[in-house]
Length: 199
Image 1 (cartoon, rainbow, N blue to C red):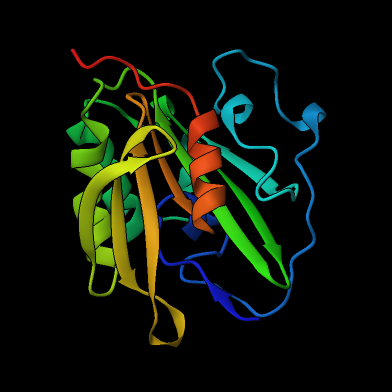
Image 2 (cartoon, helix red, strand yellow; image 1 turned 90 degrees about the vertical axis):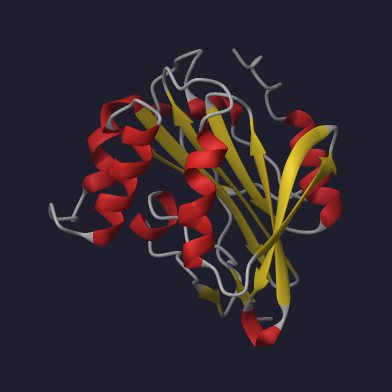
């Protein structure tokens, strides 16, 4: 079954070749080795979902300057990322991002986390959404609740001329983006960190 990621993530997914990627076959499922990731109570890795719909996802983390790997100073993706961080009073060394991806023959879901150290709670989503909308086809959005969280649900044109939904949850210092079956998205949202209080 062909599946498509219905979002262009200028930092995480582009770097790993998953921007608007079509999964023609099931990808092997594996978790990141704990030895590859330093144990840090504040690390985004520890908040990533270790199961999506009962499957162990691939988990990939990117930290600081790693986001600029293979991107020259004038690359559009790099400029968008720098502009995003500048708008929230941060720089690339303040950011860590990660994605968890589960892709099987009849199942597909992903979760992306973008954490910016020192970001003012409530500042990430307004800064990020305009960039996200620019990369999507026929986007529309609706504020609502899912998994007990306040979310923005973005609908855009995906593969096979079908609309797909992307859930965006602002936890204060972390922006979470989720796609998959609604029950999996709701369960995952319930287990993500509570939002930080806005100042």
